[in-house]
Length: 169
Image (tube, rainbow, N blue to C red; front, side, top):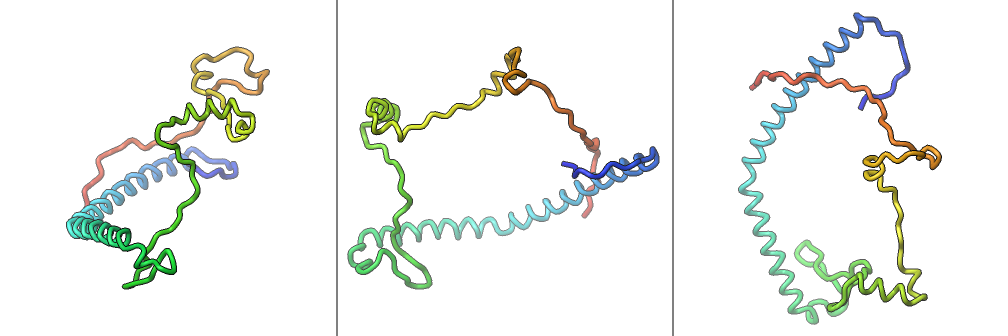
């Protein structure tokens, strides 16, 4: 998106120079980005097998540590919920509070029950938003009296025509 700049007088010659320069820079930018992306892809490919192997080992090791800690929880975590061993903190922590729907219940049924109980109504929320897609499709009359209208905003664009970028090595 172009940055807003103060209005200035631009001659036809300055316009042509700027437009040609923009297109040249855009093409050079695309070529440089392609060159970089090619090198990054080669580096990724070079290390991919090792990363995959390490990730698989780490996943298996995590599961082993978790299983051991779960099985021996009472022996390992006697004074705290976590310990520090071998350069790592290991343990269990409580997550944030969350609403857990109990087995056999569905949220819509719980909402219906909460609506019947006045003391629980404060824990329900109703959200109203404009259905802008429906408004655009229907284009109803008289919306300006409501404070809005359906219309288009004009925006300036500059899109260089894509050309073949020379493959540099």
